[in-house]
Length: 277
Image (cartoon, rainbow, N blue to C red; front, side, top):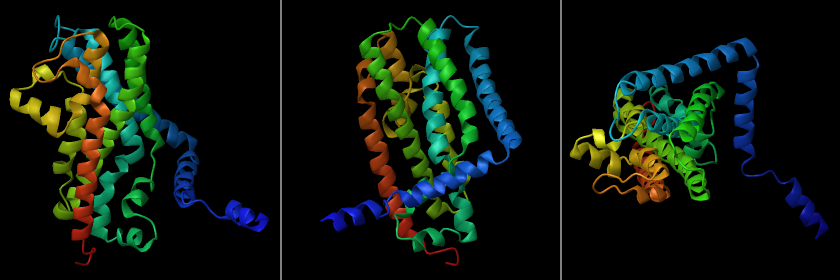
């Protein structure tokens, strides 16, 4: 029995290969401190420019889509924190078209691990922490200044919202990557799912037409990422078919996105016939 326990302790974990790959990626990015610092600064500037775009539009108005400027800052912060976390961990799925064209995806098929899991853990870009810091600052400031009460339910809603929003965006990255098996070289079309979804998540649902409300509310449920949590935190009523209490259903929206993502990935990966056809 002691020998069995020893074998179990020395047996490598199933997650060991993924940890090893991610560890090597993290070390390589920190190997050049100046380059890493410049990457972080550039990511911060991107976040600041996007915030400035929102501020220039909204600060001239009494309200935008029923939200004040401080409420829009809260909305912006929640959306950007969720987007930045998803981009940090799975944003590299944008490179799937390169893998397909160059025939590099075959290497993932040869390894005894799920291809999607290998891709998800093959890279992590620490420079995206810069944009995340801008989102966190906006979230904290917006929460403090918008009048959202600091209560246990509100804190619980935030704790539920951020992981759910991150999962929704991560699932949309998988949607976009799965479509590349058929489109091969159409990254701009797939960006409509990812970067387009990020932009839509940072807008009040009420500024969209009824058709777009259905698209961003139910088909690509980015409304659950930030808008519904924002109005729920502020105690505001939602528009027709989108009451504020739906903010608590964000995990179900994430499950929907990932169910479709896994089906698309399974369909696309079975369609794949290697870089040489």
